[in-house]
Structure formats: structure tokens, C-alpha cells
Amino acid sequence: MIRDLCDGQLDGGDIGSTEITFTPGKIKGGTHIADTKTAGSVCLLMQVAMPCVLFAASPSELRLKGGTNAEMAPQIDYTVLVFKPIIEKFNLTFDCDIKRRGYYPQGGGEVIVRMTPVKQLSPINLTERGTVTKIHGRAFVAGALPIKLAKDMASAAVRCIRKEIRDLYVNIQPVREPDNQAFGTGSGIIIVAETSTGCLFAGSSLGKRGKNSDRVGIEAAEMLLGNLRHGGAVDDYLQDQLIIFMALANGVSRVKSGPITLHTQTAIHFAEQLTKAKFTVTKSEDEDSTKDTYFIECQGMGMINSSL
Image (tube, one colour):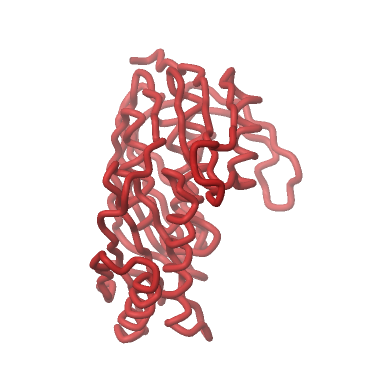
């Protein structure tokens, strides 16, 4: 997909290959289609394409096919509810239209992402956590599964959150995906917490055969609570997704986070190798010592879109 959207050259991009050589050309806008033909994640396709099409000469439409709610990747709901509003703080906008949801193993989902290029990205400052003001979410079933599973996931999640956060109404909607908007059978849940300063945190989980629906709800709730405990301003899964944008932005970005994940360390390593951006990670001292929080700071390279 990236080779095609920048008229580049790619060698070794085959199954079983241990090495690739990629030579980019000029990034072009327009419509680009990428189909994993499996439950491969459309969200991961989008992660790869976004930093490129932001610096295209004209607006882009990405038609991405595969899994929308699959393991080992963000669920599309996370991308829309958490990633999108935070990433737009870099002074960009995009639109994500979920045409059809797809699940493991057959995929079959499709989303359309529309994006306008930018001249330059602005740096971000996400260091004030604020207080949790709202917790909401959706528990879903699709295909052959009964809505009762979604209700059970939602109730279990609410019970789990209530043990720790008693003074907030937790609104998790059980939904059955319409048959014309979902391919195959799947289930899962995503829960989002919003704070007074506009920070967003999530917890999510997917159902699978033989996995109790209460367990699915509890897993998502525990993930959310864990993300709220560390005192950072981003959750553990947003952390690494911000790195490439911080590296490209013009100026100093600062993000307060929980413990630095291996994904984030890897992203920083390559962002520094490929750009002139400089990252520093420091442990936060201002908190009570029980909290494991860090500041990720980046002097961005100030990438300029020469086509605009």
C-alpha cells in the first residue's frame, strides 16, 4: 500500500522474506485500496498510511479491508473514540467511515479513511491528567451470537469498575451489529474514560469460543482501571502510536505516560534513526512515589509538506 501511494519501489515484500528494501517516491493523494484478505487489522494499515498521506499533494481516501475488531491490534472503536480525537491535537483532521465490521478469522470488514494533507504538524502537550468525568462504552455481538452475551459483558464490566469508581455512572451499551454492517461472527467490548482535561483512556477485550462473556467484560474493565491508576495522560496503547507524529511535528511535544512500553521504545529508536527528531524519557518526580509515571519529550523534526 505504501509503495503504491508514493510510487515507490519495494523488494522482498513476500511471505517468508527476511529482508525488504523500500525506496519511496513522491507521495500522492487520491484513492488507495488495501486488502489484507484475512482478519489482518485495518487499524494497523491505517497507522502505516496516515503519516504518509498527511504529506501528500492532495486529499486521500484509503479503502482498507480486513479485520476491524481483531486480536493483537487496536479495535476500530479504539481508533475512532481514543486515537482520533487525541491525534487531531497535532492539527490534522481525518474522517473514518466504518462500512462493515470484520472479525477473526475471515475478516471481511471495510473502513474508508479520508484525510486532508497538512503543511506541518503542530506539537502536542498531554501532561495534565485531570479527573475522570465520564465512563462509557459498547459491548457488541455480530453474526450468530445472541445479544445476551453483550449484556453479560457489559454488566460484568460495570460491576468491576464500580468496585473502584463508585461516584460515576458507567454507561456501557449492549449492541447487536446489523447483519448488513458486519461480516462473520464476533463479539467484544470497549470502554472509554474521559477526563476534565480532555484525556481519553480505554480498556477493551474480544470474545472467542470457549471464553466466558463475564471474563471478556472484566478483562476490558481491568485494562481501563490499570490505565487510570498510573497517573499518565495517555493510556498504554496510545503511547507508541503518538511517537511518529511527535517526531514529524514542528517543535517540542510532551506526553505524560505510565511505564514506557517496548512498542514505544522501539518506535522512538526508529523515529530517531529515520529523522532528526530527539526524544528524552524521564521519570516523573512530582507525584507521590506510588505512581509509575514518565515524561516523553520530543524535539520534532518539523517536516514540511513541500507540495502545499
